[in-house]
Image 1 (spheres, rainbow, N blue to C red):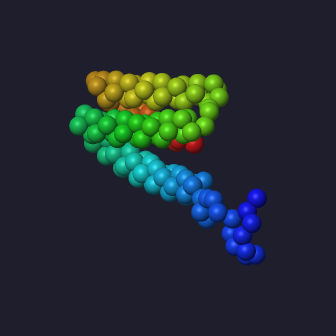
Image 2: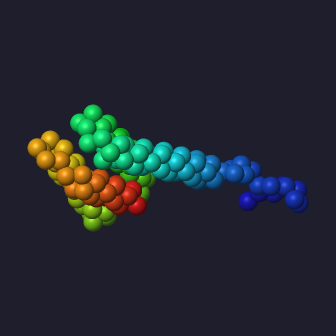
Image 3: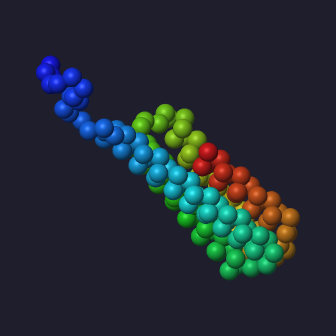
Length: 139
């Protein structure tokens, strides 16, 4: 037991202990990640509009690159989260399923763009489907 003067604080951990610091750091990192992801999603939306407007392969490649960057950012954040806490099997299975569906939609979008008759409505539908899957992946 500590036998100091009345009003003295017990020696030991400083106020704002390591737990508080880590909590603040995690909250700050989480906020920054959310901002980066929101910006990436906005970039994807803008690129999707360019793609459906121009229907060019150049815009398709730029769109796919932005989707890839988004997925890498989200998945790297999830891996960091998974290291600090355990995820159940269903959570992981859901993530893998979404990634597979996004990749499949991107393949179909590419096939549609490379086809002889480009259907603008189908391409717009694929872009919308991919956006929905990306939002599902993040949430």
